[in-house]
Length: 529
Image (cartoon, rainbow, N blue to C red; front, side):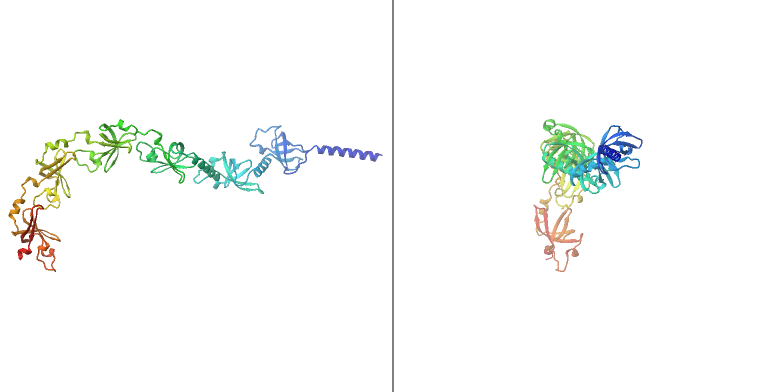
């Protein structure tokens, strides 16, 4: 009877223990359970998660959450069952990472794009928090030319999952691929939106001598230097710098070649609008010389408005070969508007028109036949320029230098700086030309020459030139005749230059007299015969 009672008591105690044990949840290592903070020590935080023993978390896990307090609830991962103090070691961080990994595995795959925060720098790259930590290799941080990687730490960015190792719970991501995708998406979106005449904001990406490349948000457009300002600029860097944000107008767009031409000056009205009313022909203007070319000088009247003073419009009287001889960049000059072409945006100016045209008086002052004294200013291959008064120049052709002498070059007859008497032959005030003559100062001797040297007349002369076609013989001062090679008695083996020399005296007869061409033909062969 006593044994039966004892057995019943034992069974009752067992049932109570079993019932008590069943009030605690069953947990195993690796399980994730919900717990509540019941105490906070110096090294551990104590967690009640419904087990017979309490759990402990190292206080170090709460360095990012220093405000943890009793009563806070969160999920923890069971790391190991009762330690030597009868406590169970649990981890809040590992629970978070495990849950994050499970979420990533269930929701994401290699090639997917996810958001993440760059948290710290490690060897070979960076760590990115995307619910769990993923590795971002330095080579995949950005496109070529990226600066210091430290500048993206703490930023939340878009990444592409390039590798997932499930057994090792390892993820590798790429910011570079995400940037490329973002740019491609922006580019495709921009293609559908871009229109000629549209105003768009862009960032100056590169500057060259001929313009600047502007990133419109996926597509680069060229802003040519001529489309930057209505005024003159020497280099794009005078207006822009790399990184500047500017608003530009789309001038042209080719979807096939993806070439975009942009304009900056087109954002403002062209200064050429109403130019005919602003600068009518005949208006006296003042401007600054901004460029000089061999053919003329460009004068800026206002920002974006330049006129060309052609070299021929610099002086009424002085022959100017290069505008640099009389003008320099920066000079302020007065001019007269000669013509306006709004369509071609061209303005012609004249500086000489500021003063009266002296050529309008020249014709009356120097009528044809007037004898004047002048100074040789310049010699050319075919004549000489003679200044006769106040910069007015006339031209003497070589054919008007002598009635009888054949002048090959004016230097045979004149010298630069020499004073000489000339006769006015013609004046063209409109073309600003004056034709002069020297031989006209004396009577034409040819009528007398023809009488004096009739055909068959014997003459004695001196060889002045030996050519491959004959001899030139001076028969009197400044009067020459030609002995053609066919009128010389030469053996087949003889050469002309070996038989005759300059200054040789010869005897010949006149066989031809051309009054129109002013030529005398001579023959030595016929004389000898």
